[in-house]
Length: 334
Image (cartoon, rainbow, N blue to C red; front, side, top):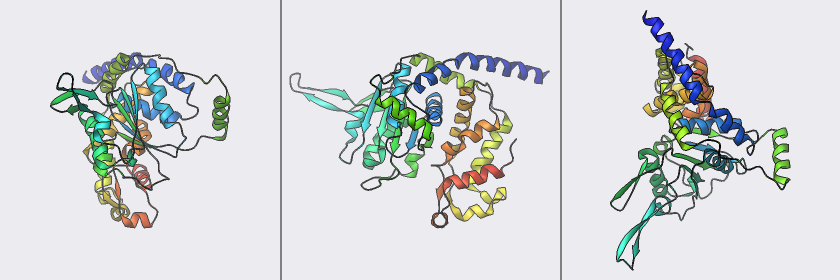
């Protein structure tokens, strides 16, 4: 009898998810008018948005990172701001400041660019730690304090930070504790030859496509609530926890060879975000329940920045991605 109830329950969740996720195809096709070939990046942006998380994008310049979040904000009919991180940037340039008004002999508040639905933090590793932490506090708390006044940030709120992997001169790498605040770290690769031909042609035309606002922020907020309804079986939870615990205690999972390569494993934020991202991925695929393939699809993006590697691993050219792949290929799939 109990089994029957849970079957009906999953069927109704499935129906609800299919109903609430109808806009996904519309949103993706609108973004594809402008962004060519970067489907992986678009999917990750949607996971971050639906999971109330933030994304760190790494890739060489010119791979449409800025264009992607700008296009998303136009397609969603939401506010967008871009902060170019530089070594002389101050926390007040990000969150805002108090300005003295001589006429009224009083202070007024000038809000910074962080007060938007979509915030692009371009080249976040170009600014010093105090500026990075000002943004990261806003990301974590979803609020900003200027003077003695605390302001809640707009909903939905998505930060997409970019960093350039090739030009490391004059950069301030994000500490591990700050990297951990990002739900996903996605590495963007070059487009294929055919895709690049389309990009080249589109950019040489006078009528470059412009995205239309196809959905509202209210629809996004409803979808965020619907994602939480996506069913996750206890076996899938156990699968996620096995992957996370294997990054901390590899010897308990017959992965003794990884122990000298890992300096620290994923934190509880890793398991929370892996579960959230898997639910979001299922939602994007218009399913009301999580399957192991959903976990495997997002595991690299969720964990690549949460695992510390030792000097020994670096000497052997062993990256955190190699460690994750080895774990995922060893842990038994439910």
